[in-house]
Image: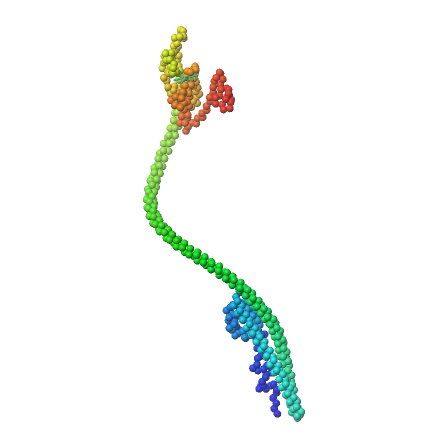
Length: 509
Ligand SMILES: Nc1ncnc2c1ncn2[C@@H]1O[C@H](COP(=O)(O)OP(=O)(O)OP(=O)(O)O)[C@@H](O)[C@H]1O
């Protein structure tokens, strides 16, 4: 009898790994939850996928969600990756505060799809575990029946018994090994299963929390949408109003632009005309400037020539001026000499001169009663009075000169003028009038009428002459003039120009 070792044959329906052939491998059934080898997911870039695997944040746009909804790659993605995607979508909804309801709806649909995949995975895992338990039980029963058959065979011949005992020992050993391996695997799978159960509970909690959040977001977004719609309606009405206003402004602006265009066109023509005028004016100015330049050049030449001739003339005048300065110096010497001679002549004529002026009869006086008998040219005067006795009836007087009744004021002054001019050469001169009351002293010295130059007396004529001469000599001599006026009455001398004391008496201090 040929016995093949149990479990070592190749035609059995089960292998020693303890997993049914052609069935769902438990690790595969876990959907790569423990390790994730997926390389790509439709709608996600490779860097976004690697970020999601590491649990980092990724932005889920509308386009990305659409791609993910269409994609089949979620079915082969790990559960952890699916959770990360779910978390990312929920986080993205919270980040978007714009109340985009279609986006929230798509996100909710996506989350539902992820939940379905996870739930399907858990149900598959539970089914696989159940099948495996059944297989293990059937296999145990099978091994038990074989053991029984072998034990009954052991009751045969010794040789056969020995062989069989050997087989049994080997079989037991193999069975023990298989049992140990199975125990270990079962232990591991139990651990995995309990871990999965825990994770399922955790995930269910997380999913319910996500659902609540989603509901809350939906409610919040509903409110926001309503508010936004209200705002949108208000804004629309406002914008329509603004648009109407803007259209009105635009119409006004267009009208203004047209007006401005017309105005600027007329201004343009005006400016064009002005430009022509200015251009012709500029041309004429340019021609005039050319002429002026030519004139200026000739004037320059002339100026240069004139300058030359001026220089020569200056030289000439310089020499002449020198001569004149010398002449002026000589003139001063001559003048001084003349003055000296002049004053000597005055001295020779006599330092004290006595003139006599005969007053004409006043209106109403009889001309028959005149006592003047003779008036000589050399100063002789004979006065006769028949009423007086002897020599007293006829008297002869001798003066430097006698002015008769017809002598004018000017003639009287001309005789005294040289003497008065000696004052300007440093000589003292004194003129005084003497005579009885009404004899004509004031008439001779001051004059009867000051408004008429011809009536001016000696005083006014003398001052006028002195000021005139001092003015003509001002380039060479500066004269200082002082005036003093006194009254002598009853042997008392009184200062008539005193501003402080009108009764001031001589001697003045
Ligand atoms: N030469 C003259 N020609 C014309 N009239 C004259 C002449 N001299 C004097 N008279 C006149 O005689 C009058 C008296 O003259 P005047 O007042 O000059 O005298 P008097 O000497 O100054 O007198 P008194 O001493 O009283 O002041 C005046 O009316 C004056 O006009």
